[in-house]
Image (cartoon, rainbow, N blue to C red; front, side, top):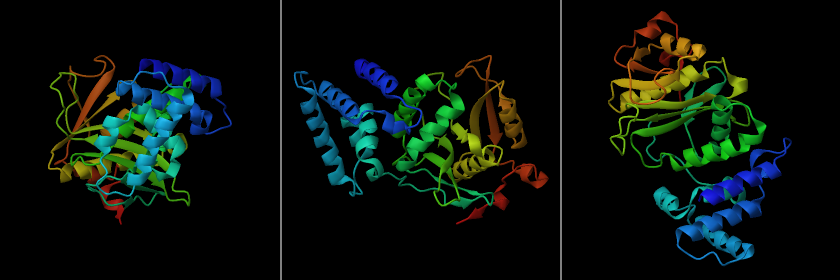
Length: 302
């Protein structure tokens, strides 16, 4: 797996071109061969085949996906267990818009903010745009590494996509233009951690709040947070937690305006630079002051 990651990273560097979109910069045969190699490695098959045979094995896996893509009972966990991270990448390359995926436990209707964008639950097909937004928001601008970061982030959010989880949701903000571009994202998770490690964030936990660079200062982040609060209240939770870097003054100002308070923590993030913020959802007097850019009362629910 480590060898595949290194080889993929080298391939991205060699094939990068600023004039092409992300997935066009990756040689499909190269990515498919890596995927097949990873699958064969997991199955314990000796790697004595050539590249064409690797590709043939990968094509069989993709044919299986096409056969079941309309099956409502097709299991995301089965796909995760049988195919690795690089298969997700090859799926984006080969299947393109044939990827299925939508949160089955729908907990939030589409919300028109009245400000040129709509908040809705994320679909699997939104995730490539989400990965781009996350990289632009949280990673330093280094063209040489951006493609690698995008693929890593895409694999992470694909593997974490909430198909069946009743207390986990991903939300996106989509422009109300004809192309319905994804311009914002947030993840909200109230599931019990699988391990009891002390560095686990408190739940419910809001993370990966990111907005497209050309859509900032339009109330998208505030609207996404309010939507998360609506979902968490529906789950029967009283608090919502998030973390923010202490040097991120614009974010701190926004969270303070929305009613979030600093909480002492010693379990995750960098103790000296990371702040844990929490809001009691039963205290909703902030909207009476008219300070929130996108309040619940101003949103139009479809």
